Image (cartoon, rainbow, N blue to C red):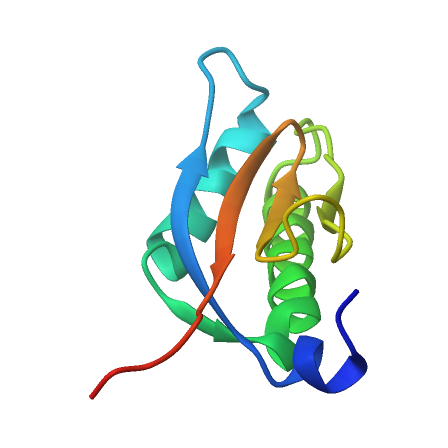
Length: 106
C-alpha cells in the first residue's frame, strides 16, 4: 500500500492510449485530445486529479458546442491493487495508461 507522500510526490509516464473502433463521438474526441496533450508525457502525482478535471472541462466545452454529443464518464483509477505502479485515466470505455516512474537517470 502506498503512502500519501509516495502517491502525491510520484511521477507518472503516460505511455499508451487504449482506443477502439466504433466508440461514441464524444469519447473519440476526448481521447484524441487527451492523447495529443498527454501521451508520452510525465505527470506529477499531485497533478493527476487536475488532468482528469481538464479532460472533463474539455468535454463540457465540446458539449456546449454540440449538445447532440453524449457525455461520457471521466475518472482516474484508484491506486493499489496487484500492480501499484500502474494507473489509468478512463474516458468512457477507453483509457490512457500511466506507469509510475521508478527513477530518473540524468
